[in-house]
Picture: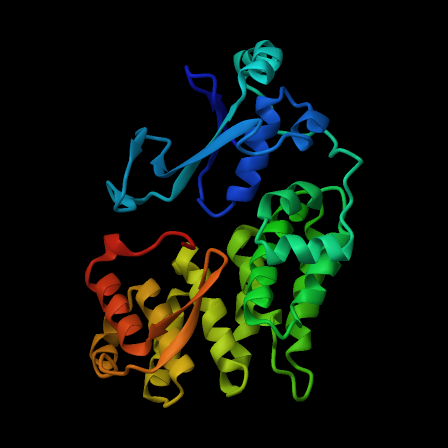
Length: 336
């Protein structure tokens, strides 16, 4: 990722997609430490450094574009700032400036050898929604993937959703060095859905999160999810995962609109709600009249977002979808 520095002493990394904020955090923190991975790993937030995020940033014009659209281009970039405490900054500052003068190369240093998490520690970090430590550890310890997979079968809906979310982020780190390992993981997750009596549990959400965070590598797996839309038990989860993917890269599934529109005639509130979310993200104008028919549906479903689950009525989701369709600039360009 492109990196740079600010006059106040902060450094930043630029994520053009706005989806890989965990990776941007690592890039900025390690760069600010003059590529000293051991130093970076042993720093504590708030105590040793402050962090801040500037969203909807356009690297080309250097504008912040709240609407997410500028001169016909979609703007979803993010600047992740890290400002180290003065003593650390003074120790690393000269080296950082030299790297900037040399147009700092991409991070290629080895990950630190220590701090391998046990499955119990991974569970605790997921339960507390501590993403950054797991992101930093992912590049050196692939067992984290197995520990996260285990949590996809938790009976706790929130823990399961957080595990899927974090697995998508962690996989984006591992895929930078070993995309084959994540490709195999995706195949395992999707194949598990074919098991008779499978409920999907967190496998569907995890597959969606992996594709969301690494679309350029794994978008080819999206069609494999379509085959499960005919399974009433798996359908809501598939729609939920596709809706998440469409938040970041709607063009990957734009042609899906006509295929899912008939689902707005179903009676299941989850099917209705997640279909509405998906169609809104896709900007499906052809679905306006069908969405208007469910505006009065007050049944509630769970919507996962940034580590939390909230209740939303089907009617509210339909209204939000209509707003996105009628005002394209209001569509989210990333998970929020």
